[in-house]
Length: 579
Image 1 (cartoon, rainbow, N blue to C red):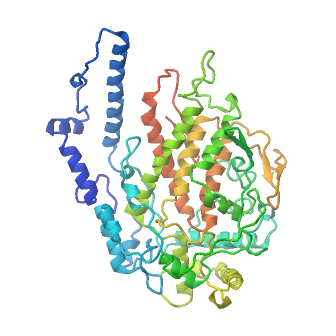
Image 2: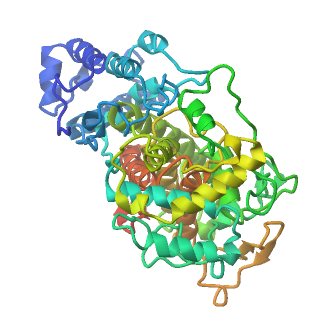
Image 3: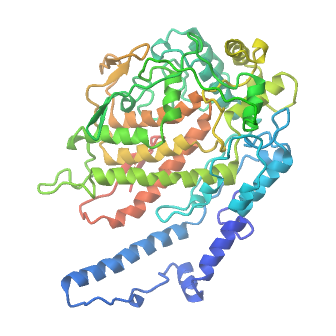
C-alpha cells in the first residue's frame, strides 16, 4: 500500500485536480526549472518601483527579494523531498465487514458492524475530498464526524500533511493489538489505585504478571510497579509518575494557578461510574447515539485534586486543549530565568542584548502556537491512510467473540487473559450502580468519556503528535540537564503535595526528563481515559518530532543572529538531533 512518490493513480481526485491546476498554471519553463531544482522566477523579474537612491528604500528592496527567496527555497526544499511511504495494516481489505476500521457514527447492525453501503459512501467522500459528499453521508445518530477534511488542508509553513512518515498500527489479529488492548483493560481496572500504592497493590501485581505474557507488549521492560503504564523515554521511568509541569503552580498573566482539577468519582471505592459497560450503550455509541438514546454525564468529585491516579491523569488529558499543558510548561520554564535556557540561545551570554521577538518569550510562544498545524498531518493519517478503529470498538469485538456472537480473529493471548473475567466483574459493578444491562457484566472496555471515544479514527493519537512536537521544541529551547528546583509529588489522595527529595525519593528531576514525562502524561492519559492505544502515542510522538524538525530547518535561515549555532534536542527515543 506504500509508495515513495505519489503517481497520478495514487492521488485522491481532489489532490490530483488541485495539484494539476497549480503546476499547469506555472507554465512549462517554470515547471521545468522547478523540476531541475532551480528557482522558477528569477529575482530580476521582480518589479522594483521604489526609488533606489534612498537608503531605506534600498534596504526594503533587498529584504523584499530576500524574503521571496527564503519562501521560494523553503517550498522547493519540501517539494524535492517527495512523499514519504505510508503503509496500512491491511485490515480494510482483509475484512469486508470492516471490523478492523473506524466507522463510529455511521449506521451499524446489532453486532456493531458498519453498514457496508455507508462505509463505502465514506470512502467515496474521502476520495473526492468534497464537502458536499460528506454532507450526504448517512449518519446513524446525533454525533457528527470530526473534521475529515482537516487532513487535506495545505500548509504554507513546514511539510505538507502527505509528505511525512507515519507508522502503521497493529492489525486486529496481531499479538501487538492483543497486548495494547489488554493494557487498556488493566488501566481501566487500575484507574482508582493511587500511584503511591503501586508497589503493594494486588491488582497492580496481577496486571504486571498478565502483561508479561504478551509477545507484542510495547511498554518498558522489565514490567515493575515503577515501570507499568509508563514509557521508555529518558527520565520517564524515574521519580513520580506525574510530571512537575502538571503539579507545580504557575502564573498566567499575573494570575496564580493551582493545578488541581475536578475528577470523576472513583468506581471501586466510591459512587463513580464509567461508560460503555453495557452492550446497549456500547451499540448506541457506535451508531452515534440515535434519537432516544441517552448520553449520561459523569459523576464528579466535589473535591479538587492533584493528579494522583490514572483516573485523574485521564481526566486531565480528557479536558485539556492539546496545546495548554505545553503552554503551562513554557511559562514555568521561563519563570526559572536565563539559567534554564539552552546554551545555544544567542542572547543567553550577550552583554548588551536580550531576546524577545527572536529567541525570547514571544518567539517561543509563537512557535508553540504554530505547531497547532500538526493536526493537519495527524488528520491526514487518521482519515486518509489508516482509519483505525478506536479502543471502545475493539472492546466490542472482544465482547462479541467471548459471548459467541461472532468469530472475530482476536489473538488468543487476549482471549485467554484473566483480565477479561476481572473486567466482567468490574462492569457488573458499574451496571448495577447505573441500572443497566439487568445488572449483568460484559467484556466491553470501560471508558471515561460519556460518548465512548471521539468521532475520528484512532491512529495517530492527537495528544501523541502534540506531545512529540511541543516537548521537542521546549527541549530545544531550554537546557535539558537543568535540574528542576523544589520538586514535589502528590500525596495519596491528591489533596495536597509533598516534597520530592532527590537522593531519597529518586534521582534529581531534569527539564528533559520532566518534559518527556509530560509527553507521557498527556498521551498515555488518553489511554487511561480509554480512547487511545500505546501505539497511537508512540507513532504520534515520532510524527510530531519529525514535523518539528522540518519546521525548525525551514525557520533556521530566517534568523538574523549570526552567532546562533542551531537547535539541538533529544528525541523521546533517546536519539540526539542537531539542526
